Image 1 (tube, one colour):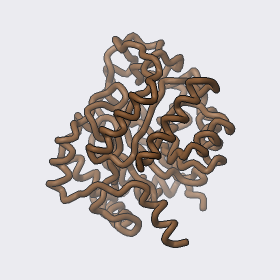
Image 2: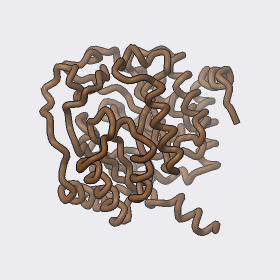
Image 3: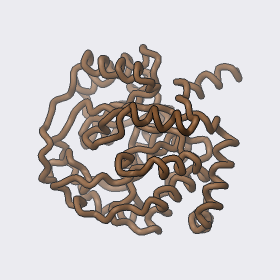
Image 4: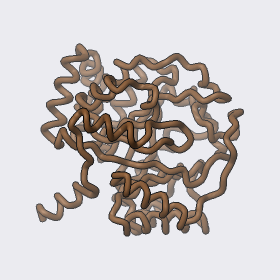
Length: 323
């Protein structure tokens, strides 16, 4: 069913507490509200990306102090995956700073990483830039759980943030992921100077993807020195909560994931986000190249809120029981 833009506008404009209540109700209708999916994100190939994303420390177009690193070997990634599992993560996400995945030994190595993570009993997610149908199928055959490919912002605002690829390029990769039968992880970044209407348009686009994303990461911009957005105004925290709530209502079955920017967001605001339907976080002290709350901080917060880690592959297990 297509969701109209005017319906998203109306929903977004609701009084915040009414909106959070509606989102909490939708959350409880489709999920165990006491569960949070714990995920870990590892940069498997850092820096040297030819895209000109204005928020990114890994772009060669931005004057950051990040050092370029080669693709990690499989054993090193497996060691990190084991540590993540021991820390309570059930999904292990691997990101490579590539504009697009290219066939060859590097891609073969990523396929082996996916197989290794799955063999550990964890969910596996990768983000490798643009992806062809054939590459998506190879990742599916390796057991990939989800592919992350964020839309970042609205189609209209997109060219103000990235000029080296188009919005349609992103939509094409999303289509290739869907054709392969891989779950999609797709969200955006807030606080890049976009308008409220841009946020509404992003949510409208995400909600009308077919199928809808299995996971919706909500990132708050982490300003990085040397990037064009280093001095971007701080995001209004209630706007962050509002986007989370609308995402939950529009995509009730999705995991709504609190992603980048949590280090600068208070514990109280994060608690409100969980109330508004967020049910996944990234753990560990780093997200690719940006800082993140440590595992101990997250464990303390979850204990105080009465939240518990979600089991891995829970939806797969449910489908098998139904069969």
